[in-house]
Image (cartoon, rainbow, N blue to C red):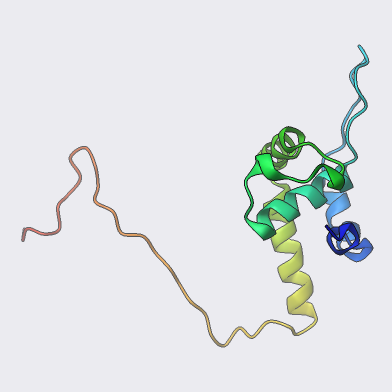
Length: 122
């Protein structure tokens, strides 16, 4: 595998790093924490390639369990929502988004537990 192809670019990490919550070391000690940048790169690799977490290559420097755990932690902390907003802001400022066309998607599911059934008049 070409590891250099999957290394996280400095420009992207400069955007992501301030959004990642600070981690306080456990006073009891233990294994050293995998670097946030390495974990983020592993998460991006899984999301980009679509592979199963268990197939995450060890050469990326992060175990599948650690990468998945960090993904869940960061989702709860709002890292990815904030990253999405920041990237949209930067792209918009650079004039790289064409706002003249948009697609809206919605899901239509029936209301459960006694919701109104619009199939019947009244």
